[in-house]
Length: 338
Image 1 (cartoon, rainbow, N blue to C red):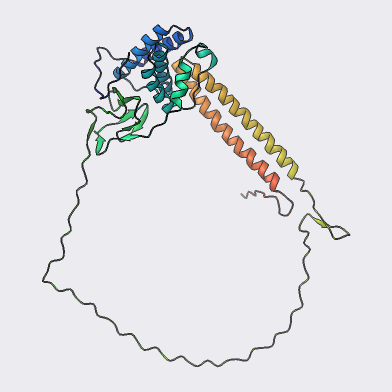
Image 2: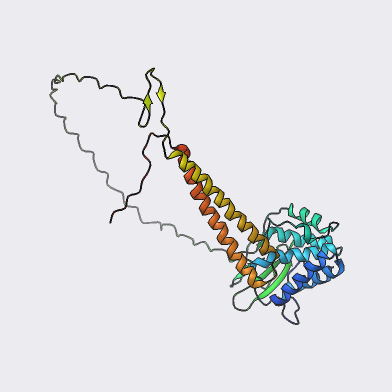
């Protein structure tokens, strides 16, 4: 059984645990889980959990959720569901959207059920009152952190990444004593009262001036203005519309309305296609074991998602303008002068 200490301390590392060793153990654990080699999966997962405290480099962001899931799955498959579910809770905190695929685990594996239960657990941040980090740059589970606060009932990886990298694995909010210190309260400065014996200067009150007498105004007789003839009522039909012989209003459909609605729908469809391509690349990203390929796929997924959002915005704007266009106003144009 892998026991995460309740109070963090620096790991006893004979040799550093590199990211290359971590990736090799990660692949070995996932392979053992697919082949139902539960004892082997637990052994390698235990080595990974211990090795995290000996990492000599910052854990890559794209491997954090995958690493925690592999540790949790290996421990659960090997019979240690209590410790494994804790790693699952941290994994879902990092990547809430992940779900196990059909080919990743055997049909009778208990891992999937424990993972779903851990995914439904939520907890508030536990903040260490009147504590602060010592000087330096810190990351908790791959994310930058400025104050000692973490969620309880799960293990965490803390790394100091300024210069050489030092790593700790601890439970809940039991941060290592090496990295926290007492927060110095802000001293209140006392304000001396005004010394007695010195009389305050009285402000002179100005006497109000007497108001000047209002000049009498001579009322002028109003001038007779000629009556204006009433203006003829405007046609209520509006631009682009006409009135039939029986007095009913006949609306004229603007010629731009239908092309704008069709073009907007086509552009929205194209945005959906780009987002579908992003989903395919995300699947390749999750299943890749090559660090270089992982970096490339990460950039491709991000670019495709941003492109789909931009195309969708253009399509939505075009479709909306086509819907609201009713012929009462002019179509907006853009003029360029040189």
